[in-house]
Image 1 (cartoon, rainbow, N blue to C red):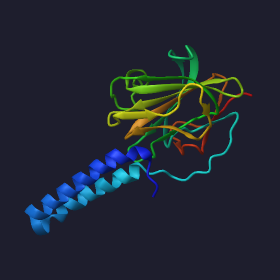
Image 2: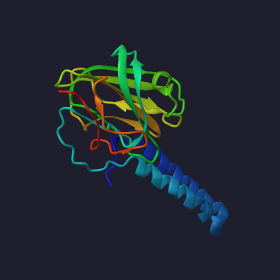
Image 3: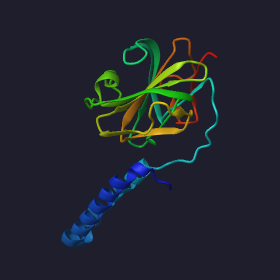
Image 4: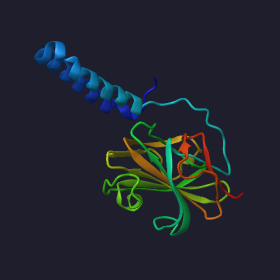
Length: 217
């Protein structure tokens, strides 16, 4: 199983803790040590599972908006996007549980024209106010069809680290990685009002593969 580059520190700490706990359990509990070791082994295995990098065949897209993450669509609504668009937009929010792949991908292709990191709170990721009050990053891409699309990584109650690698002037490619969020979190995508939404609340998405909307040419 291929692991993400962001896993290195976490897995090192998890391995050290697993060894220490196992040694202490064997020393003090003897034959009963498996009662401690087995649950800890499950948690240790989940850390590896969280940082997995699945192999995906990413296609080229022009008008299609691609799911930026693996997760569940929890919100589709018209909102006022005040940071970059400064007007009304269609918002699609996808929630990621700790068991989902947490690679963050560009939802559209084009040029990165804006990026900003915001420190903030750690409300549960499905809370509506998490989009404006939680620790988050905002990125905007201007597409080949001259649409401006904004997307936002949002840290959740468990997530405590957001990473994004893009910078202004970069070429964005729909479905390709631009960042990572450690443990449960959310991704918001803000689209023009005339965008055709092709997903619905409750849909399970595969980042880089599923089409969640189509923009006018």
